[in-house]
Length: 195
Length: 195
DNA sequence: CGGATCGTTGATCAACTTCAACGGTCGTGG
DNA sequence: CCACGACCGTTGAAGTTGATCAACGATCCG
Image (cartoon, rainbow over all chains, first blue to last red; front, side, top):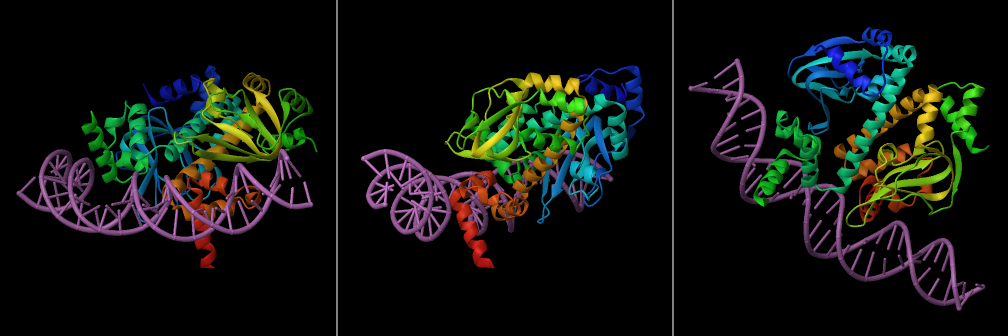
């Protein structure tokens, strides 16, 4: 199965496509392959593409004044990645995106994104639904971060990411949860004693 | 100016409308007026509508196990409010929405939302763009919450909400920032000494 | 084999919370 | 119209959670 099949399946979960539309979509994307540790995007660069992940695993993060990495999102098969703010406005990105595992991507540029949504209005609908779901997820994450202590956020993360949790090093999970690696280590220790 | 003019202006900042489309949109919304302290939505209710704020001021929040209110969003003229997760899935809401000031709203039900986006595809585009911007905002907020201490988050909040800041009581701002009211009081004290 | 990186553990530290008390203001009912 | 209660913001003192700094063992990879 090549990358476009993954993308078409993803789109057709939300809207149905004619052969012509599939063809139109096809012509607006560019494949890209990334080796482990390679960057898709660096801070202060402008984010020129949105990336659909066909296979592999990536992380989106930013680095604070103290040099600490804060992961905002993991992306694997079926996820979209970009620095949205930079992609939409053309200002410099505050984020990095790089590959935790070798990854196969489909890229769409800003111009092609505009062109595609105008040419295939169903893509407005597809992205509308995609973004709807993304907002629900982000709202829950924000809510959890103010409501629950680190230990419960970890348990929720394990719960809702069973498929990929063993592909992600522990210090990356700590970064995603917004805690120090040492804290996560202690949390796991406590949890394992408790049962 | 009645509420629909506010809504139409908001939509036409993103897509152009024909008279027919304005008419279609008009028929999918219901006006609603809310007095200060009245609820638009309570926890464990299903969120049946998305609300567009024509005037007034509201807050969206949830209450944790300790009974503490956590505000996730203030909404005034030009904002959309709902418990998105509940609205889309029909599960019970985890959020409350109530009025800080008397408010005039336009409501759209789930069925009308579906019907309207199918009848007027430009509305898919409108919401797609709306949600894009919402995601950018939520991502920045999440990034700030892990990157910066409370005092800097407060300064950024003041900076980017000058128009309405004096309409919001201080304990609500503390709740939005995810800190105790006492902490915000101390932060303001320090800042005022510093200059 | 050797260096780098990762996870763990201990000790100390900082940010923010919690609990408690007090003064000011606002709105309401007598 | 005034008085009272409720609520809000402030200040102080003590308590918690998680961060930071440091050291060490294990593993991975060249």
